[in-house]
Image (cartoon, rainbow, N blue to C red; front, side, top):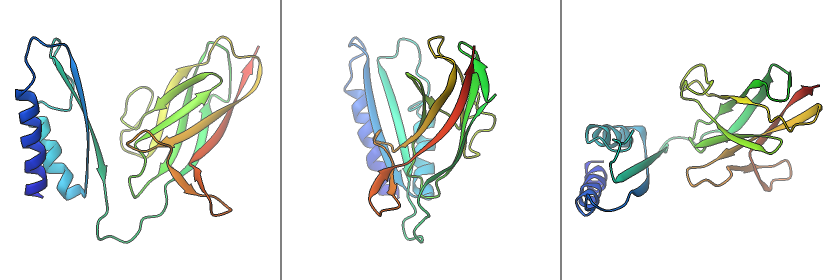
Length: 192
């Protein structure tokens, strides 16, 4: 663990030293994977260094850190699943706000992002206690959003999709054994 964490920190410090303050803004995105025991000290050290969090206004470097926890040596985790998806209230006028929620089961930590598509509008859902999400880390991804004024009255499908840390759809075995994207559907009725 120390070796892996040490290399990450040495690389990041070298990167920061190489960026002149007068240069344009630079965005660096890294993905760190490992067990919880390996990741927590690295993420804590990055936080101590002021990296991977909110940047200071005018700071020329933005660092996006994605952490992917693995269960090395553990029994295979159940495949990820979207256990339920819902929209509250179940009916609303175009232009009104609704809450989209999806209950996610993901013991293997394959899911990095959950998104909802309502008509032409696609938004990320959150499990961080913000943007309409009630409780951080509870496995219920949510977002309060305003229905597009362009939506026609009637039943509208709400597609829920899961993505990995690379932004690719999370794949699961379908009924036929073939790999298929992890998705779920909910509905909202748009009233006149």
